[in-house]
Image (cartoon, rainbow, N blue to C red; front, top):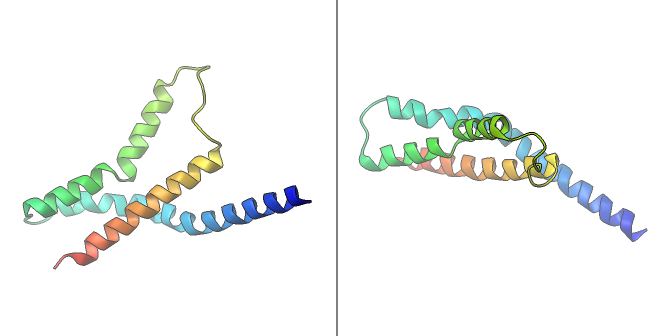
Length: 111
């Protein structure tokens, strides 16, 4: 019976993590485009330009391009990516949550 309890706790933890990360993953592509739009508009200081460039570089769209390139270049029959699909999704959700929190702090902290 302890094995079933352990599995139940793991499942509940995953469900709660997905409940937190899924809304962030939905808005992350839209928020990742915002640094590009802010780079196009108006005058920038070196600091604001650098922050927007870094946020753009580590956002959704470059990671999507990197993922698609690795899928295209991966040789058939080589090892799979680490972890299960659900685990990779949770790691991506955690990354997106941290990125989104940083972006929102930066966006609202501007004078």
